[in-house]
Length: 304
Image 1 (tube, rainbow, N blue to C red):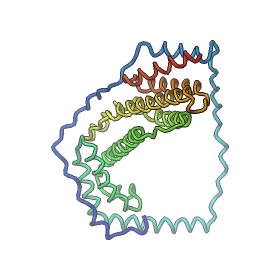
Image 2 (image 1 turned 90 degrees about the horizontal axis):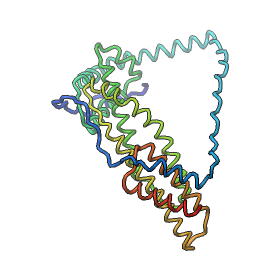
Image 3 (image 1 turned 180 degrees about the vertical axis):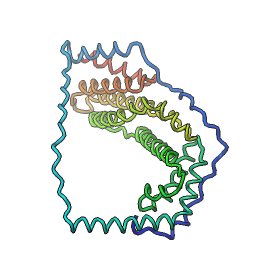
Image 4 (image 1 turned 90 degrees about the vertical axis):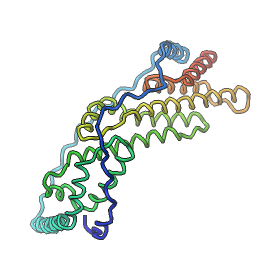
């Protein structure tokens, strides 16, 4: 990139040492969640109370929009072509300068990546930051690294993928863990349901590909611990329990006359639906969630 700070080239931290390492496939994570034989029947019974015998209508799928006709590209005039050639000339000159100026740093990174082995998340993220601290200085990473024979491109991508995945999953887990539980429950359910929809798409893909991803990373001497997926599922159950608990609390307050009744029966049903959706996503409930969803069912059946 233009405007590279050449003084920073020698200031990057040394690579973390590669420890003696023997990669092995991580074992399945234990979980406090369990499936319930009564859950499907409970949902069907409560839905019947709320909706009667009519089936809930499902919105039809939106038709796929065909790709717009590609607009014809304007041809460059001679002046534009010459200007483009001039830019590319300067661009490739900068690449050649990077090859010379950063040869030592690139060779150091090459050796570090080739020998890197880990099963520790913190060590992996630290090592990735070390690598990026060097490579981010390059005008065009692909062009520069291509000049270095036998650079471990595949290993580099494995390190980046694992570091990015750990960061993303940790962010999801922390978001769920620190979710603010505040009234009104209607807004809480809206936000929680939208977030579940967002992460479910990503996590469903990961569940399908994690065995293949594990093997691919192991082939690069990186052991990735997918136990964080189980932790995320447990945290979604905790969130749904908090939503159900708040819905019941607001219902009791309405009943005791402390607040106006703003459709508390409807909110109970929404909380129940969210709890059931999380149950299906997470593959089970813990004891607290199971107790709360039963209480919701009882309240709903009493109301109707």
